[in-house]
Length: 429
Image (cartoon, rainbow, N blue to C red):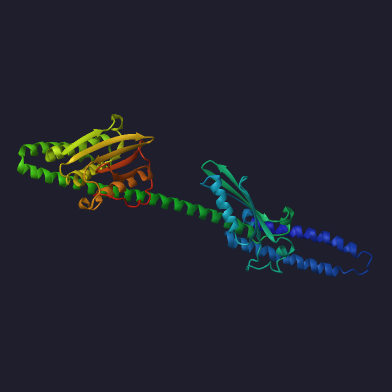
């Protein structure tokens, strides 16, 4: 109440002083006349003071509707607001610039990103609608047609602050005579809401992105586990079937095969739920498998292993080498009369390690073609684990057979987003 009364008295006093000065000018203009039109000046002065009083009441009512209070801060024609934003200065300035550009009735915008400052002019409107100021509003009719908002962003590390100053686009002395009907408070509130809304949208977008990343990671892990589960039974079923046959035909060899199978399982079962292994562990598992096959195939199977000791700790997906070895046996050497040889090789090239399983068996042919699940699983697991840092190639081996090569990075891969699956290559199951 005190602030309202002070505003009324101050404004009326300013207008009374202006009328007093105008009276001197009036009397000087009509000096020497016996009957100067003093009554006309008095009438105009009275009408002006009534209009001033009506404008004051309109201003108080408008500010009360906008803010719900009447104090010095809300009644002032010039508003100041500081907003803390949890973003770095560049992002904050972009949000501020966008908010000022979308401000209703904004007619001009000047922004300087280097200095983190922006200025905008906002056209005033009548409080009853989007129209020029009412002819009965003396304050609005006399001078101010635009309000001005100045914005400055202050950097502060990971956060920043925005200083908003909004007032009439006119000299400060006009505040003694003219009021804004709360238009500057409305403007500064609109900019504050716009910045808050945009920060909220940005945070929601970040949360959605994190949630999507977590979901994709969970789906990737689930898919890897599913692919892993597809590989292991495929090998175990074939090995147990061979052991069953040898148990009936050659118990001694069957006993030796079961010993190698136990050795294989000892190395395999602890890793059955782990997507990552090492080249050394995979090599031991593959050699145990090949020892089982040597018992079954006899002189028809020969193996050569050439893997440097410094590469045995290389991380690689579990059961992947075993899949290639099993594929070479099933489709390359078993159908070939007289059998053949399998090579297990590893070599380095720049920051890549090439792991190759080669055979001199039947090669690519329609008689040994399978469903392609095994090699498709190899490609998919490489894509999900390493993204574009790893690759898989299968080509004809000279003069006979097939060579399958996995190229792996020397260093462990960081979390990657899997690229789209590559076009299918010619493959054996």
